[in-house]
Length: 136
Image (cartoon, rainbow, N blue to C red):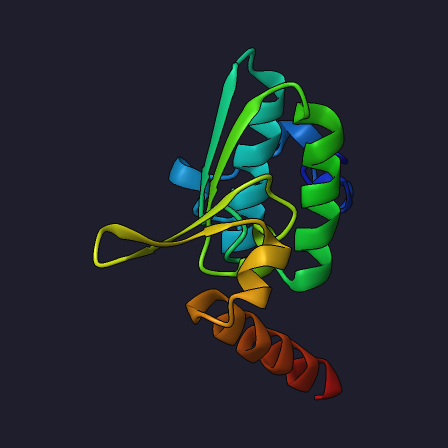
């Protein structure tokens, strides 16, 4: 539960792990549902991990915590992470930027930043937006 960032939430649930969350987790927030799915995935015996915008409903600090924990717990798996938030993919071995269904850019975080393309521009924008949000 800790690796998925769900431990703090569980402590607040009336019956802990035995708390009923309703059909499709209706009583949970979007971030809690995402973290619960990650926890279930960590318990599964899989060889490939596919995360499709799985951290979109969590804040940047929680995202960082979860990604670090996933690296520790799933380092042996092949991982594919789809995300609009570039901070979720910056440590990937290879990043593919898709535009109109085609690969427009490809490389590591550092090489994509150096290329000054869409990735670099979007990275700078998202960093500015994150910094501005933390000032509020």
